[in-house]
Length: 174
Image (cartoon, rainbow, N blue to C red):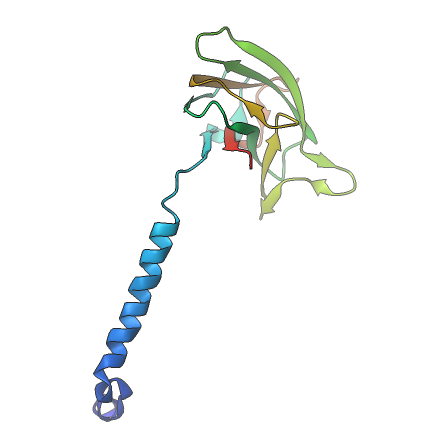
């Protein structure tokens, strides 16, 4: 009974063009969104998931990508996700870069994850924190070709507990 009454009073029944215009607006917004997002993606990001939330020093996640624009400048980040139970305010990593046609270059780098005044410096949700820490102080150029990056934890504790993911992010500088 209620449904029959509603159908008699439905304003869309009186104005069938209204439904068409509303659908047209939704379709137009979707098309504009798709077209606006069709520019090339200038970012590479990949992370490695650690089973049981333990990062053994023998596990060396490797990341490969291809640089096609040698004129652009890039920012390189280390991406790290850990739980609130992570025991340290920093992490030491061996970062190995293998440029195309060149030898491996390994750097031992410390990344600060927390301090006493602010706590965890990354973004957090519940008990998981994510850090995107810039490796290079200023944007750098890469030559064209395939690159390989390897991360290895270099902390005294092995395995390193409460680490969920580690990875690399590369983005074009603006």
